[in-house]
Image (tube, rainbow, N blue to C red; front, side):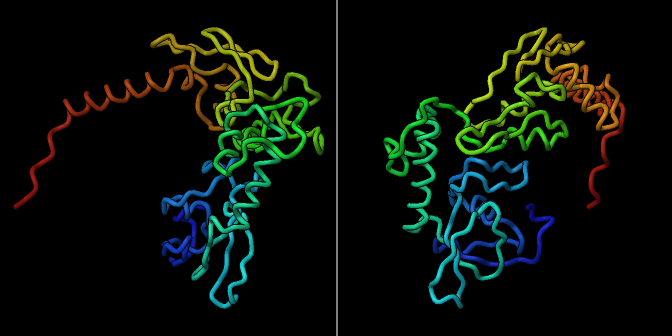
Length: 269
């Protein structure tokens, strides 16, 4: 939640440090702004809080609670005046250890999970390792960003140990536009793709690349240009030029305007 859309100013305490925020802001964002580290795997500032990984758990109490604390998910917990949060209490650390132990069992060969587990003193999972190791940690960042841009080409399917991210019926998804948003947001680089100056393939679907008429670089797929043109009310021709060339053209326009327009008058003394 952004400060502009939140409530009145409040003061809270995180790990003994007074922190200024606005009522309704989520605790994770407030802590990050204050330079206080809370681990998370499923959070991204461009997406709505999800609370799936459970790594961002913290203890929270208030003055009238006589020392009693409740454990909350920081990414979804709205702050208010006077709350006191502990990001590294004994039970918070132990809860994160359990989460990472389970993740290490699911993804024993995933460098990101191995590194986080080591930070909490776990070198090897105490559970039976996944006989079919995967780098997918089920954070749902890929499916959520796909939904966010209005495509919804992939989803989490099945339950329990069989849960996975996949397109419908494991077939090339008809709605995919080849934008790579899912692959680029994935924290473990789980989603494979290939791309060249002429084509791109992801989720088993191939796409024709759109080449910039100015520099010749292949920058987006034809389907991607059509999608954003249709949803944004912008001509499809706008997307043929790559962002780098657009910036150069805009810079050239400003330089020409500066040469034509009179210089600003000096301030009155």
